[in-house]
Length: 209
Ligand code: PRP
Ligand code: URA
Image 1 (cartoon, rainbow, N blue to C red):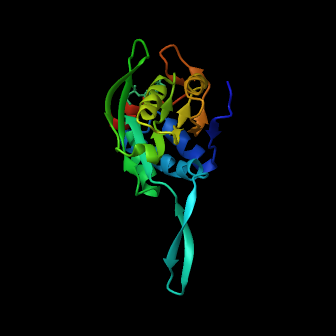
Image 2: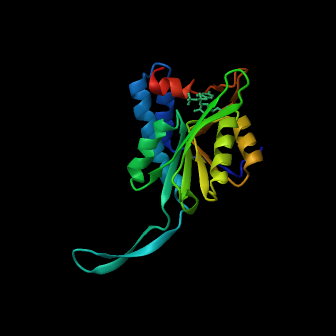
C-alpha cells in the first residue's frame, strides 16, 4: 500500500478525543459532540495547501491587503454518518455550500449502494471536501468520489476519522488523485467488514439507531 496519498493527522488533542470516541460507553450525545469537535480540528491540516488571493481591507487605522481563500468551498457528507462531521467543518468554513451523497453498504456483500445525490450546480468550480468518519473496504468512498468526478469535480479531498489499510488501498487504487486525510489508520477489517479496533458502526452510534 502506498501511503503517499494518506495524511495522518495525529495531533495530541485529536488523539485524545478520538480515544474518547472509540469508548463504547460514549452515548449518541457524546459521540455527536466529539465527532464534530474532531472534524473541526482536522480542518486546519486538511485546508493547509488551499490557495488564497489578496483582498483589500480597511482596518480602524489604515487600508491594507489581507488574504482570503481563493475558491468557494463545497462540503459533501456521505449519508448518513458523514453528517456527523458537517457542523464541525462548517464551524471553520461557514461560507461552504453543502452537497449530499447517499451511499450505504450492503450488509451481506459489503458493496456500496448509492441512493441519493444533490450537489450544488457549480460544484466543479469549488474546492470539495468529501467527509465520512469511516473508510473500511473503501467501497462507499470510492463510489462517492466517482459521483463527484461525474459532476466535474477535480479538486477534492477525502476526509475521514478512522481508515483501514484495505480501504486506503482500495480508494487509492481507484482514485489515486484523491488525497486521504484521517485521524487514525487502524489494524485491519474483520470478517464482517468492520474496522478493528475501530469505533463500531458510526451511523448507529451517531444517531442512536
Ligand atoms: C458506513 C460509513 C461509510 C461506510 C464505510 O456507512 O459511514 O460510509 O460504512 O464502509 P466501506 O468503506 O466498507 O464502504 P453505512 O454503510 O453503515 O451507512 P450509514 O452511514 O447510513 O449508517
Ligand atoms: N462502517 C462503520 O460504521 N464502521 C466500520 O467499522 C466499518 C464500516
